[in-house]
Length: 289
Length: 289
Image (tube, one colour):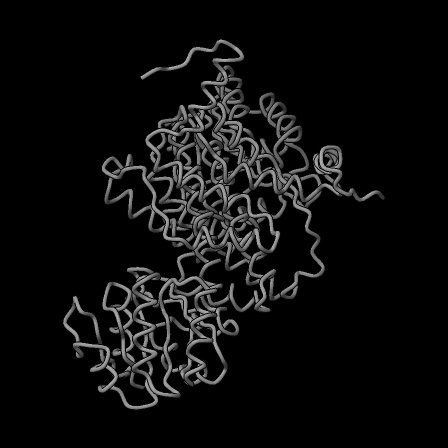
């Protein structure tokens, strides 16, 4: 098949390479990378109707702007796929806006990060049955065998990817806490060695653990040059928003997100309040400066 | 080598099978299973000195009683290995008690559960260098390649296994919460399908996820016949005790343990208190009955 890839960052470039390896023709547009097209309009001209546009760009304003531009460029029966980490509510809205113009919209969560090129990308798609089924060869190419599905209607793909990332936060935090407990122990444990043996036969073996072993190899067992400062890109928050909307208790994933927030604070104002109160009621000493 | 296996439950039987597959001679004692010996004394007679006794029995009283009996049976330079999930402080004490009699004690956490026979058991051992190095062929046999280590001195093996299990609690809870959010969604998602595709190329792929797919296959996507009641066998608690002893924040693993506690309550008294207080200050309706 033929497809227009918009965005050639690490994920987009990896997806393009895997699609081409599987015999698909990929036209490309990225203002910051060598591309076949110099504009969205030119990209549209390079594709035969009905076209498939695949957005592999950061969620937020750039995705919204590009989507709106495409609505003015695409023709009826074309498909726009958002492969980024958009919020599923935005995807539902975009599906509706596209539909008004006879354009199809498919939301597709993509997992695999910078390793996807080698290992394949796990794809979770949502949308109407017809355009989704049309895309089968395009889903099959970047994904490992059995590593993709149309999980439901419009929004379901990004919803599934959102929860995937929420789970990822919780798993990462579980390892993170465990390794801090190991490190604080009296035994002088070799964290690299322990992570290493856990890869074989243990119940906690996982791909994240494989990556942790790589991190210890690259950075040393104290991760000396890595600052304990952890960003988040939204999917963990949204998972918790949805847990709240659905009244589902999600304490571990919530704790994982809060631990990231705490990691970014030089000082916690809540801790100042706590210290001030202990001083007020018990005369406990406070640190000043 | 030659070894006396005490306890032929699923773990002990699996360990014995793997040891024999690797050419070791295993004498066995389990009062409830066909064994080579009918008593610990007879087991000792079946082994050449210096002997290796491997305990693969539940932590707690039965391990303590068996250990104390062995102290009276074993000779100087024999080795007692505790392969169960004993608390590492008990293992440190037992190491000391054994040492007074010239007997070696090695604590060895064993992970792999009922799958260990096929996949190999991940072993985490702690103890003095000499008896531990003597045991190398015995560690190598049940473990997958590179799946074992002597992580430190006396107690370090059980400490490492304890934290392994604490991490396991956190990972399991992360999946658990994520799948409940997926299930509660408006999309009518197929949880079996989603767990299935996540095994290939996704960041959350793991052995626990493989097992979850098996659970959905065996029990159906609603896990209809599985009650939402989760036991714990101590290692999660101990991980949190140690986190507290070392002043290490472990909120996600703690949340995972508390979720297990909550799963066992027909009704939470804390919830009754909450409801009563809402009624008192705001006149909010309470459920009675």
